[in-house]
Image (cartoon, rainbow over all chains, first blue to last red; front, side, top):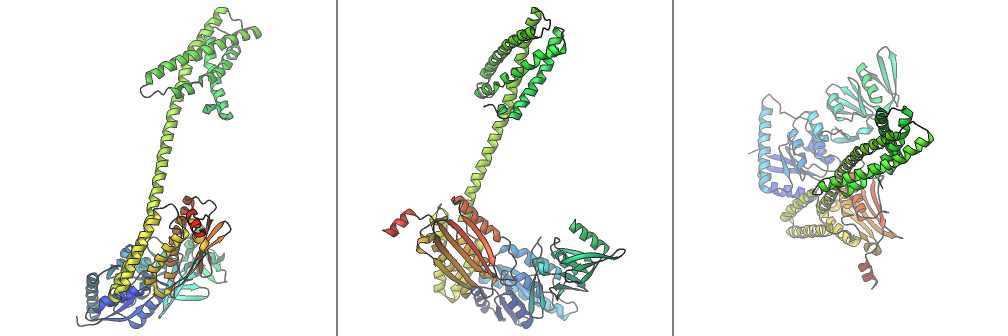
Amino acid sequence: MAERVRVLLVDDEAPARSLLREYLGAHEGIEVIGESANGFEAVKAIAEQRPDLVFLDVQMPKLDGFEVLELVAPEPGAPAVIFCTAYDEYALRAFEVHAVDYLLKPFGRERLAEALGRARERLALAAARAQGAAPPANPVPGTLAAAARGQGRFAERLVVRDGAQVHVIPAEQVDYVEAQDDYVAIHEGGRSHLKHQTLAELAEALDPERFVRIHRSYVVNVDRIARVELLAKDQRVVFLRDGRQLPVSRSGHERLREQWS
Amino acid sequence: MHPLLARPARLLLVVAIAALFGVPLAWILKLLGPRPWAAALAFAVPLQIISGFIVLSAWWVCRRHPISGPGAWRAVAVQLGAALQTTSIRTALGTFWALALDRWLYAGLSRADMYRDLFVMFVTGIPIYLLSAGGHYLFLAFEASHEAERRVLETQVGAREAELRALRAQLNPHFLFNSLNSINALVGSDPEGARRMCEGLGDFLRRTLALGARDEVTLGEELALVERYLGIEQVRFGDRLRVERAVDPDAAVCRVPPLLLQPLVENAIKHGIQDCVAGGVIRIEAKRAGGSLRLVVENPVDPDAPARRGEGVGLANVQRRLEVFGARESQLSASREGDTFRVLLMLPAVADGALAEASRG
């Protein structure tokens, strides 16, 4: 393999990073371009340095490994990912998000070499695809988000990225979410954040006890609703506590009534 | 005491059922010797009520002579004897009652009618007693099966307790995996450190098993275990893990359930230090205040971190351990103030006798 593989190491434990560095040192054509000790740093490093391959821990401060991936993977040229963790319960989720491999700590040189081999194959394939017409297949944002929150759970926080900056929004702080083409605008305390996801996917992730889809384009936090007003026949609006008005469709009104009954 | 006599409501039920039995009896008497309904009922109903109480004696007979097993035939004979006895008493009482009724409200019955009535009383008394005996046997069988069920349940609870004991001796496997990974890393860069860590891990495991097998330990022993634990985690977290200790010497000799603090410190790392970019300080405090032992474990929390699932499990386990320890006055409370999570344990301060003496001498 003539091409150099640029690698980022993400783990909050220094010994774990130094182990990877040592193991990788024995491989030709591998360049470790940096180390990150938490989720924020990882997102920033991936956005700015564009590594080909990331060794990613799962449990880290700020953002866990899946949340990091949720923020960086939908982009073209997203890195290949090898998860490294002591927990075997994330393996299924890891492959749902197209992880190259899943290393269980503690692991040896041979196991790492095997994972590296797979990563090189994946990268070669992606490069070949990029030369042709078909762009490399990234995992869909909805799948990434679902993997990030875990099966059968509702999101307790939403992560959004603005360039290299990451925002973590606790779910209960969200006022409402608005659909905007392929994006959603998450409104929270007068700010709004754009995220590459459909409203349906996001609505699925949110706790239905708290969030109701009142309209094709709106999901609202029911705690923020001050009142519902009937403007004309079958035409209602929701007034939020901050005075903002959101349209309510007929089926949205049905859902609200169910919630309150 | 017969269970039916234990409560007024049940007593009333016995009276009502017995009185109902009086109606067919009155009907038979009326059929054999024509008389007004009132006269027949006046004789039969009170007598049946008294008979009702007499046949409750089957309870004691049934308990003495179970119908199953080798003594079954004997039990049948005893029951038949008891039937004859109770029906004799019933007939004797019936005689007095018939005479009294005859004197007070003349029913126009001849002597022959009266003898026939008493014969009917005697004959009907036998099946009534046997019915009662059958009912009591059923009741006793029901009760026995209930008792057996209860015992099975009790055994299950006992088994669960044993399981818990095993569980608390068990270690968090992820802690082991991560520690092994750290050793793996040290082998290359710092072989001497790797050796030290192997030693520390071995020491920690041995202590955990030894303490977990005991019913109680001194706080000093528990804190020594915690120190081993922190020593291992220090390698993983480096500068991010800082520890402050405030332990009074007279607190260290108090008796506590084993593995009481270690899970709390483990939580403090898992839900505190691990979530914080720059780490933070874990504070461990142990003080004696009068008759109480006050233990505090504090850790920083990252404001962005979501409430992690499973956080309550560790606390619930500690709570349970306190209950098993038998410290009724002990309390466990967890609170969050700003970016600090704090677990407070109050338990009665009982100094370990031998240790206290040793420290005095």
